[in-house]
Every structure is written in C-alpha cells, then in structure tokens.
Image (cartoon, rainbow, N blue to C red; front, top):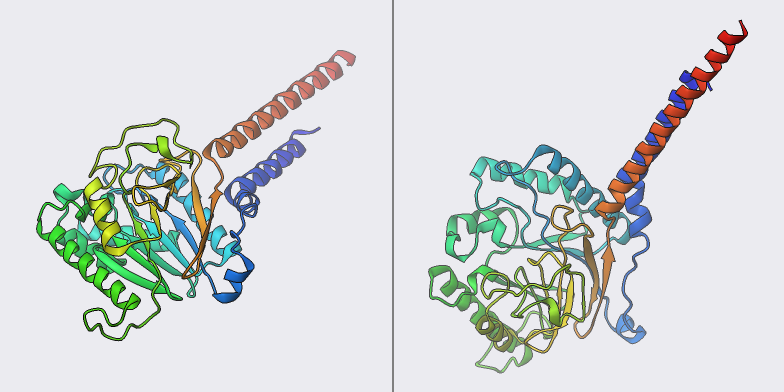
Length: 365
C-alpha cells in the first residue's frame, strides 16, 4: 500500500478512536443504566421525583490546577453529565458538595470564573433543577469557614446552612456539615437554630395542632437528609456495598459528622434516608440512626478511577436507588494506548513493506 493511502487509513482510524473515547463511549456506558423501579402501587399513587445525585466534582482552581488536568478530567465530567441529561431527563440534580477544589482559596474574580465554568460544564435543561449542597472545599473546613465564603457561595448556588426544600411533597433537608460542630461558634449557633426551627416546621406538618402551628403548605412525610459529610461511622467496613480500595478509620468532624451531631440530626428532623459525599467512595449502609445512607463516589477521575453517580426515585413514602457506573479512566487510557500501538505497528509494517519492495525492484534492475 502506498504511503498516502496508508496515511488516510491512519487518519480515519484515529478519528474513529477519538470520536468513540470523547463522545460515543459515554452513551455506550450510561445507556446500560436505568431508572430504579418502585412498586406499581407506589408509582400509581404518586408521581415520583426522578433525581440524579452526584458528589465531589472538585473543579480545579487557578492555584494548584494544571491546565491539562482540567482539560481531561473536566471534559470527562462534562460529557458524562450531558449524556446523563440526554438519556434520563431527571427532575432534579443534587450535587453533594465540593463543587470546587479551591473555592475557599480564590478571590472574587477567580470565583466568578469558577462559577461560569461550572455552569458551562454542568448545564441542565430548564425543566431540571440543579441543587448544590456546600462542601468543605467550597467554603473551608469549620476552622476556616467564614461568613464571606458562605454568602458568596449561596449567592451563586443554593444553600449553605440548614434548609428544607420540597418537590412533589417529598421533603429534602440540606445541611452544612461544617456547621455541625456544636461548639457555639456564630455559624454553628445559627445552623443549630435553623435546624430546631426546621424540626418544628416538620412537626407542624405532621400535627397542625402542635403549638398552634400555621396551616402547613404541604403534606408531611419523613424527610431525606442530604449533606456533604457522611453521618458518623468508624470506617467503610460496615458498608453492605462499597468500592473503597482500602478501609480507613474515619475521624469525627473531619471525615464524618460527630456521633453527637448525627444523633442531634436524627432526633430533630427524623429522616427516613440519607445521602452524603466527601469520602470519594461509594458506600451503602445502615447508619447510626438506623436508616439507609448512601455515600456517593466522586464524579471526577482525579479522585476516583471508576467514578459513579446515583439514579433515584422518591415519593413521599418510598424510594428506590440505583448506582450508575461511568466510563473508567483505565478504559479511556487503555483504548488510546492500544490504538497508538496499532497505528505504530501499521506504520512500521508499511515502511518495511515499501522498503522490501524498493529493494526488490532495484535488485531486478
């Protein structure tokens, strides 16, 4: 085969590999996921809230983020997210904290660029809500959390304290995990006050005659707790399902909520289900409160070679959750390595073939 034809074959093959790795692979992988099923009775009684739950996107910042790292990892998240929107059409997307990697370290100009990048990468259709819970990389751990960072994040996103959000009579409680220290700091005191007020509001929904409550705006159902830190547990050893490569002992108030704060949340809002992030690994377990808790793996290849997210359906009385695996970084890199090897072998074989052909022609002459 002559070199020009050989070159055309290589270009076509390369374009096909790039198209698959950078676009088609996300459809091939994510189309294998499906919405979890509720019972037919539950589906007919209520229109479920269809939600996508992700965590720890960690968009790289201007201080420690390398441009090539941003290019690869953020393109991966962008394609995975947009493919998910196209296939599943959720009612709401929950992001369980650490949207940014350096949110607590950047100035206002850098933060605004951060926000613009996030909205470009995680664009959702108008009929899909995107709700972000605050994480320690967004505003800092408790020891460096400042009202300025909290106000800045809340202005552009959603909630940085304790908040009740209701969709189709399904109640979601969002909590700032870093404000659950119970050490009487100003931010923690405000969060505890809001938590107590929210507990009373839920009690009023359940029993309108309780302390002469105002007329409730929606029906009562036990809420779903959503926050960045997992509730208290010693390690992932107790997970009934999980994908942590190593079992590490967790530190209270750093890796998980304290036991005291976990019990306080349980006593105040009486949740029926909990979701969290922060550990970067998937885990399903019965937590200290005796309810199912799902810790969502990181959405980024930077933190997890095999990232995943959750598809969930909620009604006021029931739920169903499915873990959805994303394309792995290992698969992505391997395809490019194999494709490059094939191209290299093809080029070498053609060069040898042409060299032998020319040698033979010269020898005949």
